[in-house]
Amino acid sequence: MEMPTHIVAVGGIVEDKKGNILLVKTVHRGWEIPGGQVEAGENLTDALMREIKEESGVDVAVSQMIGVYSNTGKYIWHDGETEVPTKVMFDFICEYTGGELGVSDETTDSRWVEKDKVLEFVESPAIRTRYQAFLDFKGKINYMEYVTKPFFELKVKRSV
Image 1 (spheres, rainbow, N blue to C red):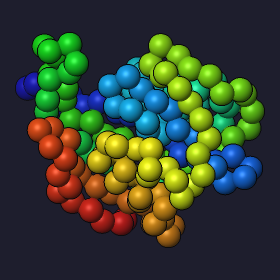
Image 2 (cartoon, one colour):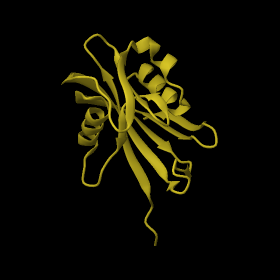
Image 3 (spheres, rainbow, N blue to C red):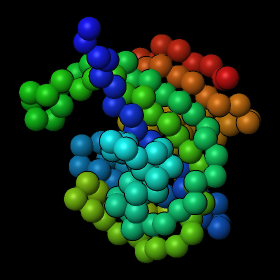
């Protein structure tokens, strides 16, 4: 039996004391919420705090899970060879606790953006959809299935 392969990832919608949202700019995807892959032996919240710090220089407290998202499409990575398997992503609301904005090997910019202006920055349909789920959050966890390649298609959307 072949074991299934999934990428487990986390995303953080980080709010500062003024209600602004942290965005990071990546080389391949443009502006997005910070986050990334969970490493072997790492729990979700530790992975999220690490990813946010690495990508932006910001420290956070993870406060609440708001969504689970499955990108069930398979596609070829930026190297032109590696097949990217299904991704399962967990989004959380986070509170800014300290640190200074910066960049990393993965990001070219980071900034605080007014909550109602975030969608003016984000071009990726998947990230836009996940951010809109945050804006519409009413206490129930969002679940969505989508594919991003060759084009974005939302297949399932529900609250649980």
